[in-house]
Length: 546
Image 1: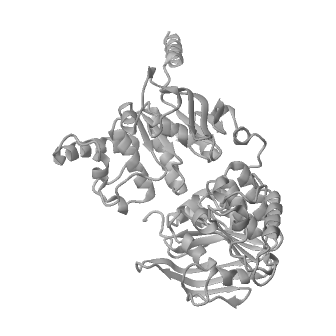
Image 2: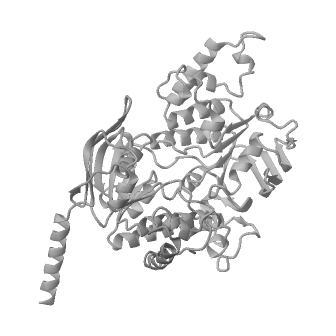
């Protein structure tokens, strides 16, 4: 009898779920910016109490669609339904009133305000702040305990880690009674441990009946945390599938329209002579803050050294010094020859003459001039090369355009039109232009910062192949990336940076996700000590006491 009652209750629950109105339903949403159709006739249903992933290449229309849902843009056509009711969302305040909260990739927090002050900002109960603060403190304590969102309400935002700042953003939304949460690329600046904690938070929210939309380009995260995933391509919705019934390979093919190789296929490295030696490298910025605190590393010909770490721990400064953009103290040698670090003879031109090519982290500010044509961008830094000169006074523009055309075809830049301005290309194709310029020089040492940041999954496959090909031709490569999967896939050896120091380094084969995550947070512990062949810095704090 008890069993029959339980089965009947289960059937009733299933039937109730089947007839439940979607938490969100978008019908026929279209949005154009001039001649660019960002969204075209998009329909999607997100069920309550689920985590729904949305993936797609850059420019697929994901952010535009979520901006419409959150009231940043107004759709040209279509309807928004919230919990079975057609709803007008002309602005973000209307979205908040409808129970929608959004956690942006770049947090919207006032850095010199406390957690509590940020929570109530824009949601005060009246002119007097004291009652609002008291109410918020009580509610914050409840939310923190219920969802594992522990954070000190009196801490200044600027003193919190990135992971804790993200918790504040989620608390802000929950305090405003949001039961639908949109998270845009939420793990982009988190350590693996912080990402795991975020997933536990999202799971708790789901169990409490909250509905979550997760925008991410990381297929592993989609597979790990979502219930359902929708795929967008070129402004249209191409598929919505149950996560349990698909695979990363199938999702990648739906995103790109063809099969994509997700894992880099490469032979074991055949390292030769030492190309780069760095000893006791220190950088102090203009505010007197020490950004690099005695870096030691080396790279040999025919190998890739990956630098892992959360953004802001000295990786950018390391690339800037090696690329000739910043002064430093210490020693850098390339092929045994010491490089000047005082700034007197230290610049990008002198580095290039030594066979150093540099793909900067920020292609828009350091890699390209967006208003200039592709053929002009293709020779930046190399414009004095004899191959580009007709004579001492005139450049061979026609020859440069032809060279660019050929390089664009080799690097699959689309469209392969040298006369188009750089701003007319997608992010992935802009990155290919920079890579073509630097890799085509057959450098002795290639510096690569965030090679696939903001790049489509199809272009990622291509870029990874070209980097490995250059390694196999005998180049030494320094790869800086915040993507652990990219580091572990491409690198032969790995060094982990934290707070301007190398916390540990060793072979990629024995690098575990957990161990590297601990080092990225400045921790040691058993997970780190268990990585065979790794050298761990004395600066790595014991995990249990950190």
